[in-house]
Image (cartoon, rainbow, N blue to C red; front, side):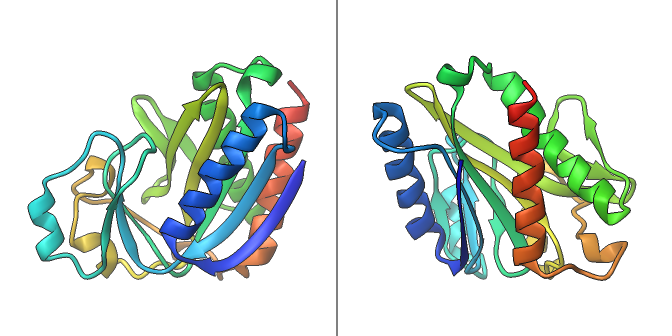
Length: 201
């Protein structure tokens, strides 16, 4: 499986690349790939949409994406993991794939010495202090793209402007528990953990 660390990139640029990668994988013209990056500050919504009046008072642009999930923030010191995976070829259901994504993040946090878990009915990954990773995927022609956002050392003021993922409060970063790890190093470890989980199926 291919892998690419993109550094800091705009959300729209990476989103359009994910769509192109997913199309190529679906057609059999490209291998699966995992992209990792951090974004310039942006608020995104999933296909459920959001009250557009929020856009007038948000401290960063707002984009309606084609992923699942509700409104959240992406920006500096948040690690994005964007796998483009052929679920049809691998014979993995969407729920099982979401479980794998969450498990890869839980194992990454365990590697860092941070206890984390799932919460029934609430996609993502949680610590005792609150939600540390959000999740949103899209599946088209049997290929999944988008992925997860892990808060490494995000300024909480960005989340204060919204109800992220429908939550009133309780968004935390890894830095609440440990010294932050450089994003490229963290991304490489996360990629390996997810790849191992996929290959173990």
